[in-house]
Amino acid sequence: MNQGRLEYRLGEIEKLRSAKKLAKLHFACQGRGEHCLYNRTFFTMKTRNPRIWIHLMFLALQARSESALSSRDSSVSSLKNCWDILKCENKTFLTLVTSAFPCTKDQDALLNELRHSGFFDVFEATSGSGMTQWGCFLCNHPERAVGFLQDSQPVIEGQLKEKKGRWRLFRRWRTRYFTLSGAHLSYKGSKDDKDMIPIEVNQIRSVKVSRGARNIPKAFEIFTGDQSLILKPKGGKNAEEWVQCLSIVVAHSQSREIPAKSNSLPARGISLRTAV
Image (cartoon, rainbow, N blue to C red; front, side, top):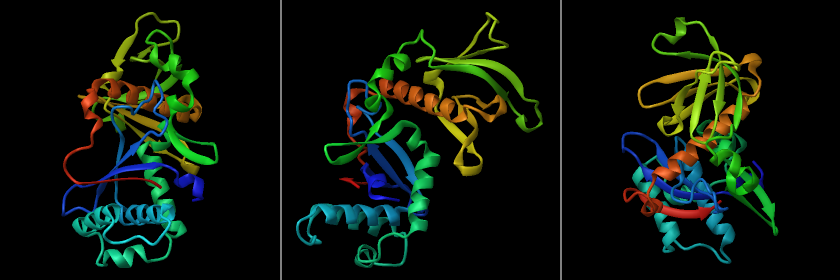
């Protein structure tokens, strides 16, 4: 993991349950453009590696400081409180932050968490003015915003194989023609059919990806309030593009549902913001 790969803003680490070694991370978009996907909220993911994240956050604080950090520093104190509450390992906070830089295996573990959470589907790194920052897709590509925001214009379309309902393991794949716009994911028997069956984007709660060799998406599952739908492109092509487009459209839909006041982080847990 090179230095550029670490240029993202880390929001809040939140203790979930004392019995589980999990933490919740909130990432902010550093672009904050007109059509930002995360103007009112944050990209959130759970991690099973809070030790590595806390260590990297401390190292980022130290790198920006002109002198050695003090334990009385408010940011350091917040990190120590996170560590003490989570009780991830039987070691002190001082032992953690004075240990060697996370090894390649640890760095790969964080990258895999980010990849499987869909972080790289909606965020990209950009360089300019001597610094690197992470922005959401629509902040980095404002010219694409119209295509994603207009309900009448397809973002992506094509044939996908689908399975749905109970006992999907024993069902055959059915080929449908899917069209994704800013507000609808719809499908029909073939491209020339007129009868469309819509799935409202605001009903999609999450998109789960099944990856093959080299972490390339080969299929994906859409979860709504009352059902799930497994989809995969014919021949395995364009799965990555479908997943990215779906993730962006769903993130935009969810951002519109959140009132402006929810720009604040949850009250529970311990907050610490730092650019790593």
